[in-house]
Length: 251
Image (cartoon, rainbow, N blue to C red; front, side, top):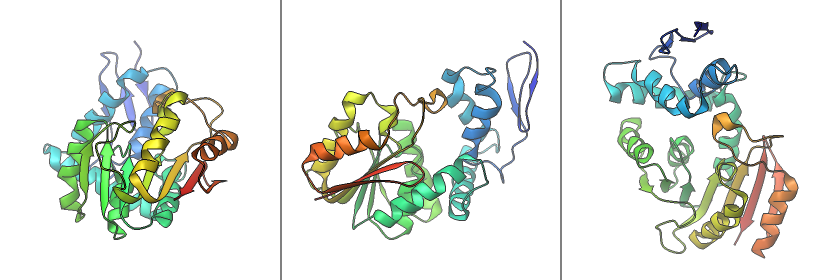
């Protein structure tokens, strides 16, 4: 194996990932750096993405809590500022800003992943429950949130069968979740969202020509697909485009 050198990452002949990313720089842009510099050239298998991501974050400080807190603080600051052009945060900043604008009352976010949107919603004054299938990710969010000055509820759960009562929140989100699921599960998740939501359901998806395997995407969406989902609910809905597609269903 030859040594691969990128602007921030290097993959040596021994297969070890090395980097030049410090505690003040590490953020969710790391996802884009790994994808662009290692996955796209075929230097790293997509199955190793998560392992590489976590190893870089943890190597920025001897204390894991310090490393993860810096990762969260840097990401939230970049999202608030609009992110660095071309980076992951820049791509998500307008999506999250739109999502926060659509919030009504208390919220549940399904497929919250690291929980950046949930933290932004909490900072905006909403009562938040963040739900994700990954127990480790949920525990991480729960451990970091207090140090960021945010109070929210975290819950491990499957978006197709959420362990919450009917009408659990005013607004229920699935932001960049459905593209990770097979097409037949989209109506199931939307049905759960409608069950949980007292007032509004918000779905956001990227528009792609092909599913991006680096991000774990397994399907694509367009306006027609979102419109079909909305029409099937039998409720008032709207579909529009803002850095991807949006479906908003009001009770």
